[in-house]
Image: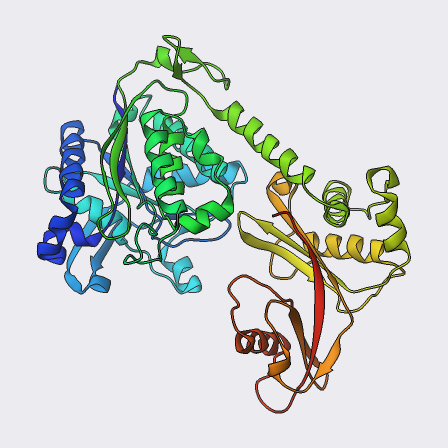
Length: 492
């Protein structure tokens, strides 16, 4: 039985009618795509599961499209008449969604009716259509499943790939060769200043890590990448590729990087994972196994250990302010009760200072680089700063109206920041503000909005004040402004 995952990039410029002569700058990629397309033709899969980062992407879950037939075109690239239409394997699509749902994994089965409520479309995107344009030159007799990863923890995408494999085996009566995975994705977009992003030294490093992970059949190295590093390299293929690796978990397979280049400041990689093994080569347990002394089987247990190690390393770097917020958050998630301070866990200096101090405080919770909850007070509402942090930590994890309450399974993924606010002082104009040094409060009657200083994505005072006004629902008219300083506690 063949089991195959194809890693295919998706730059529309490599399609002849779109790229024209410019496509020749990516000749190595075109040749690699052609090689993979011919491999697909020899395998003749009944279904191709396309995993594309450019479908309907959600911050907290995976999107699976459900429609009898999906179509799309390259209109956004100036070629509306160039497009595709494919029948969907609705049975397998439903089976995969049900599997995720049974395991309480956040996912969305996006049909036309649900798409209307989100103001999105159920259609093919270029992450699917570029690989499809090469495959269909040699073989087009297949149905599809369309999946878009969410901005979820990296290890979750690996696990989802494994679950998809389990559903494929069940659906095909243990003959997964009937289904093939195309993991669509580009590498770093920050390889050159002339590319879509300015050059970042993390870009070439990321691309090397990805190539090594494929060559050495070692997805663990991808799971060790920090969120900051991933943001800096500006890629779009990581989660698709991790699903591809997860699809092969527990099996012996061969791997190859067919081509790699970055002619336009974006890394394009073609490659594959291929197994011809029998059922005996599959690991009978969730432990990592070995064949011939060196071939890895399941990585699931190692991924759990890696995640646990990353969590322990993170909390070892947290100061007492963050530690108190985390203790209050974790205790509330486990027991739905207020945390009673275990003074042995904190320094005497910290306890004495906070017992005798009152101040406003904000507790911010992030998960995989995305805000997961933030609640704070501009002035003290408790007897001391200890209780201020505890109560705001509880509120941030359970009562932020923008998010569902944080669940126990998320605890190891949480990054926590604590901001202690200084006293506010009135100011006459925006000239007295500094987005790095000062936070701002705006007031108009009973309307009040606050924005902390030194926030990602806010670069000017005008932006800072505008967002604060939006939070206060101040649309026009005269308003008062105050500034305040903050002591931020975070792990670098």
